Length: 288
Image (cartoon, rainbow, N blue to C red; front, side, top):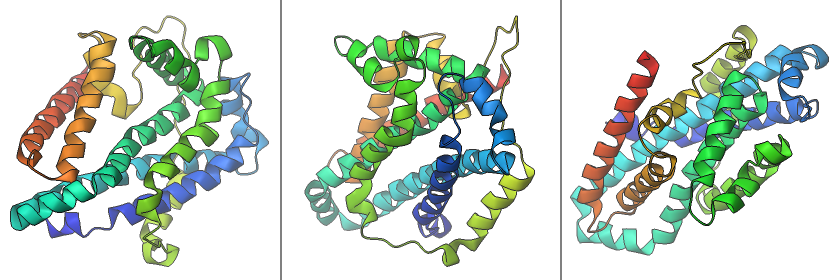
């Protein structure tokens, strides 16, 4: 428990994010929105050490997300211990910091979208499949679906233009706004996280970033690994329920957990049930 709470996962996540942004800027200079798959495949040839930069961007982005998830779990555990020990005092702190906790909770789906749009921009089989699903989920939202799709994806009408703008600027700016009050309190030093930095750099050198060719006659394509559970749910439920209501309900539960207060215990039970359901669907998807 101490290892989880005191692991400085947030700082590790930031180190991975810095490497992701650095390598992403190098790749963005050569990326062609008109030919996403061809552009992604040829980046390794037109950029000096292109294979390294693409792999560095991919693996640092994955680690950023993974460390952020562990950081979130650590916060949940810490809030649980604080709620059990602090009682009314913890509840009062939760009420006073409700707006900050709401922003931090909303930052998580923004990170998922950042990672998700990165897959779409590859233009390979996984990226195309992810883009189709994303548009179908968003347009299923009553009234606002068309507007949200135009703002977030709009792949069918604008190809990769909207996705590229959001991945490179829009979603990053939004995430920075949501987490600014949290990040401005902390300083992260490269020297204190040499192992994480070295691991990501070595991974970029020896592990090739994946790219899935579009094969004629292919019928089953899996989306990004963190989206597999959602993909399986979409086989059974309507996109509005599986792709919108279920994730939003999870975010509401997380908000009440980290905020504390009278709904904490109920939110913890609901959060555990939500995570279990998604884990089961994810396992089914990987075994398919």
